[in-house]
Image 1 (cartoon, rainbow, N blue to C red):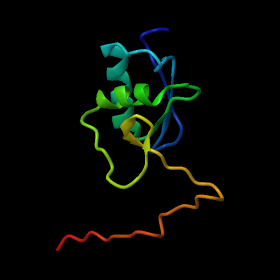
Image 2 (image 1 turned 180 degrees about the vertical axis):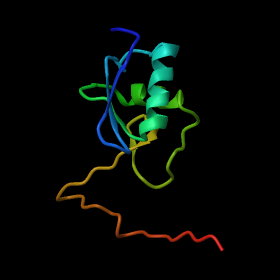
Image 3 (image 1 turned 120 degrees about the horizontal axis):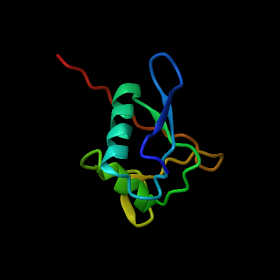
Image 4 (image 1 turned 135 degrees about the vertical axis):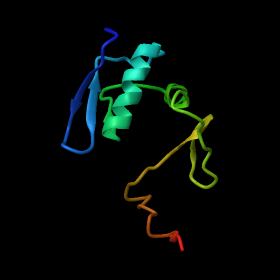
Length: 105
């Protein structure tokens, strides 16, 4: 793979598709810098058709900074830094079960 990532904006304000990188392998500093700046600029990036393990996802995420272990949601097996958000008929969304409001006065 080339060192140069292809970054295609998906909208005028948010979102980009990133290609030309295999995130199943460790990224070079140059590749990571391009990905990092794409996240800063586009806020959301899509790296399609990347068959990564939870460990590979955690390792890539660690390059962005410290990770948080969520105290409530279920974790990926063996990788506490990744939470599993799974919605289906037997497991409906829980966004209406717990709610908090944070106000600054």
